[in-house]
Image: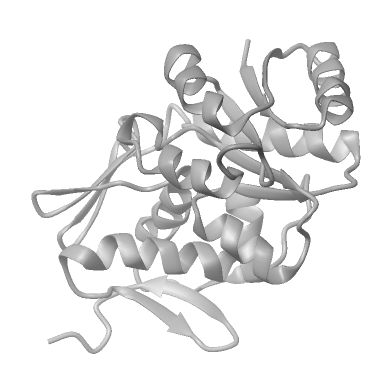
Length: 231
């Protein structure tokens, strides 16, 4: 049974979420202050974190960055849950390491659907799936959910891992943003196409620290992985 950590300083909203999650069969942990989040994450190892942005002591955005930079928590899905609904806020949240972004006021059924989708993606690996994908010096290990570039370990969040897996499984094939949205996020929730660009930038930044850029952007079309124009 999945355990969801609810980080929310508005008690009424937190109790609403807690009630509906437990009704849906999840275990829940509730934290209302930012400075208490990290010890709880370390102790309880939640399956997914619902993280409010505006918290006492330390913001949800800073917490997201800290959690995502911990190698032991790199596969823990994080959903930002906030009243900050401008496009630049969403981009900031996703760039900080969040896998999904839900704005207040929110629909409970939609929130449950997003939680279910993120949990399924985080733990999903078909028995028939290849154990390893290789492109040039990039190696993606599906079972361990790890990526290496040469001898260097590349820390990726779950969403970037899934995007890379899709690209590296078919080198030189061009995937549209719609292809990536459908495969990585699924059809159960609405995600803006711009979200793909944010995660591609994060993926590039992580990979390119140790070598040339193999991710190709095809203007107005999508993305692929190949050795385009690289000497």
